Structures are given as C-alpha cells and as structure tokens.
Image 1 (tube, helix red, strand yellow):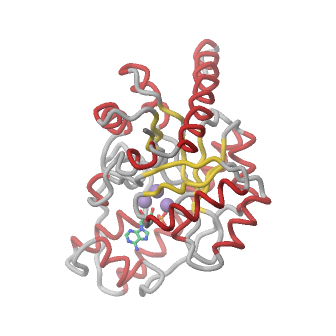
Image 2 (cartoon, protein in one colour):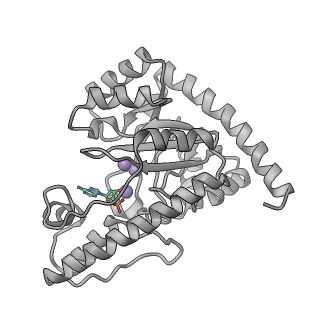
Image 3 (tube, protein in one colour):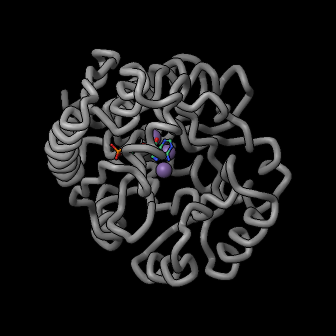
Length: 288
Ligand code: AMP
Ligand code: MN
Ligand code: MN
Ligand code: MN
C-alpha cells in the first residue's frame, strides 16, 4: 500500500514532512513520498524520519508544466542534492514570487487586502495561501470559492508564470537519477490523449492512475494506457492537510493494492529507495 502524493508545509500543505511520514506509518503504508510543488525542502526531513521509524520514504516533487490546462509531473527517487535540480527550483521559486507580487497588486486594486498566513518554516507562497488570505478578508466563502472568483481559470486575477516544458521537466528528473510520473491525468481536460502521447515521447516513466479524485472508470482507462505503453502505475491522495480537508492521506492505497500491476511498480520503487539510501550515506560521509 503506497501513497506517493502529499504536500507538506514546505509548499501548500499544513503538516510537517515528518508528520506525514508518521501518518503513513500509522496507516500501515508500505511506501510514501512528500511531493511539494516545485520544492524539495521537506525531502530530507521525510527520509530521516522514515529511517527513524522504519517507514520507507522516496524523495519526491510535483513540478508544474507549461500547458493549456493544468499539467503536473511527479518525480521520485532522485538525488535531492543534484545541482541542476536545485538551480532550476531556485529559478521557479523566483518566478512564483514575482507572479505573487502581481496577483497581490491586482487583488489590492480590487480592494482585497492580502495578508499571507503561513507557517514560517515554509518559504514558498502559493495561490493556496493567497486564496486563504482572500477568505480571511471576507471576499470568498472558502478556498475553492476564492479560486472560482479570483485565482482560478475563470477568476478575475489570472497571471501566468513561466513553467517548465514537459521535455525539460522529465529531463531534469532523469538527470538527477529519478523517475517521472504524470500526476492526476484526469485533470487534463483539453486533449488528454495527445498530451499523454507527447509525455511518453518525452520519456515519461509512469502514470498516477490511482488518484483519490479519479472515478473508477478513469482509473481503469489510465491503467490501460499505462499498461499499453509499458509505464509504471502509481497511486496518490494529494494530501494537503488543512488546506484540502477532503483529501485523506493513504485514501486510494487500499484499492490500488488489490491491483497486481501496482505491486510491480512498488517493487521497482522500493529498489530505487535502496539506491537513494546509498547515495545519501555517501553524501553524509563526504559531509555534503
Ligand atoms: P501555485 O502553484 O502557486 O500557482 O498554486 C497552485 C495551487 O493552488 C495548487 O497546487 C492547488 O493546491 C491549488 N489550487 C489550484 N486550483 C485550485 C482550485 N480550483 N481549488 C482549490 N485549490 C486550487
Ligand atoms: Mn497544492
Ligand atoms: Mn497537482
Ligand atoms: Mn499535488
């Protein structure tokens, strides 16, 4: 039973990375990963907690990809000291920050004062935090409503930021020794088949077919696509703690565990974890 999709307070979740690993242990998962948005600040904390309580943890990330509608790529088992990866994430953090400043300016012009409330351990401010501030300013009923009225595709304030192209993102994960998995393919509303084909062409390794918000028929369809293209099938809940109360960590893990194809993927990922542990002890020996 694995759950490979969770956000900690280093991006737009509310739990620490170590807390999520402890929840994984409590729910008797066999493998987990923290996949913060364009950020790996919680990865080492998660892996260390995993070693302490004997809970297998893979390094993880969720990258935003340039596309006409929402497209996210999950990366697993990469070396989280990789210089090219660290440099790109720094660049993405600057892009997000510059975009946030423009959004806040426009919201304030609409008479919505924005006061971001955020756990100080996290550096990244995401639209989730801005949505939370809109709710507290009394201009939306809840986070979803703030996206519908202001920050989402139909909202009043839409400011693009530069994201990675799919080839760049897959290459970035691969050159750091990791695997690239398409997150929540059910969210691709425009040209899903063509988009998945392009990703496969670019070197995609897997599909998150078992996703908490996928319907049973979506799960079957995405598993079929994965199988036909020799891709790994993974599972994730997209846990965000208090910022997405309906997403329970480990939610689809039990259902997915009944599928023998997911156990194959799990074995492959667990063997990556062994490599990851070796790299980590090499790095700490070198004092890196
Ligand atoms: P950012 O990466 O800063 O643009 O923030 C995007 C985050 O906002 C995503 O990771 C989601 O967690 C959240 N989000 C995006 N769209 C919606 C929506 N319609 N309702 C609720 N949360 C959303
Ligand atoms: Mn999020
Ligand atoms: Mn996502
Ligand atoms: Mn996510």
